[in-house]
Image (cartoon, rainbow, N blue to C red; front, side, top):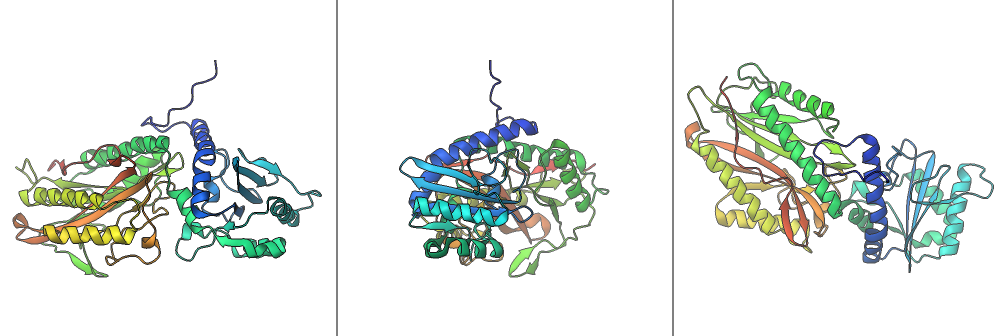
Length: 431
């Protein structure tokens, strides 16, 4: 009997060989079912994704086999839309997974690669040839200047058919298969478990610093085989140290190397990578004072307000709206509810700060030109990221900021939280 297909929903990371098999299976399905829809939606007949070893187009890695870690020499992928679907062809010195091979007649070297591309275009006669150039979306701007110039020269009169593939690249990067969403449930569960473990086992009040905790998180993810895609961050707030203004936002002022003390509000931001997907989550904990058995009521009220703001934001996450429209609607809803909030949510999946509609940034609450103008589509995973502020009576009326971030999937059925919706503050013993 053939071996069973790897189960990508397992919480423990899969062995690397099994991860490659899962990714190859996903790629086949995406090329077969997803890409034709996206090419029709954006009106592109041929998509050219090219890169040289050591200078990768961000899209290229999402099209390569699971056993490939980068381009090899020059790798040119041609994705041609026809009546039969999408025909994937590779101009490369090596076999490229699901792509059909195409080689130069003489195989003489780099110049021959572009000759093959020219002959393919002459035969296919595409009306619109998409290439990865973009002013607003870095992830859709991966065609290097040198490769762009070489392609234009090689195509000759066909170069007039070149168009930016920004919308196609964004759609490809932002759209998740149901099986990918299922895997993200498991990966987000692991993220939440690691954060909870950090709060409950790695924090020794009066000894552990915020930097110690950040490095503990990074090491723990590494040891589990799910590398972080950014350095975990830990921020502290405490009574008597008010927020400070930075670039128009109120942010914590406790030094990043401070020792964690009883009575502190501890916030961490963590993201891991596995199966070519990423998570981006935040967690909050309260360090009990001696004799305390619960967090101050004012902090619990702040948590409740944050959850209400999450509800207000997801209610406005409507397919067809732009990210800027979602932001404006969520902020208007917050104002009606009397909530002091900032919203800065974003797609997450293949990349942590992924392609797709930006729904604010922490320092851009009036809209994000370019990235915020992209429209919301179903089957997109977002990091629902925001912050709320309110005065906490137990801290002498000091304003406290609570940052929240959790993965959500927007599907045809609505919004679903990845793993489960996290509730409340983790309580850290006084020591």
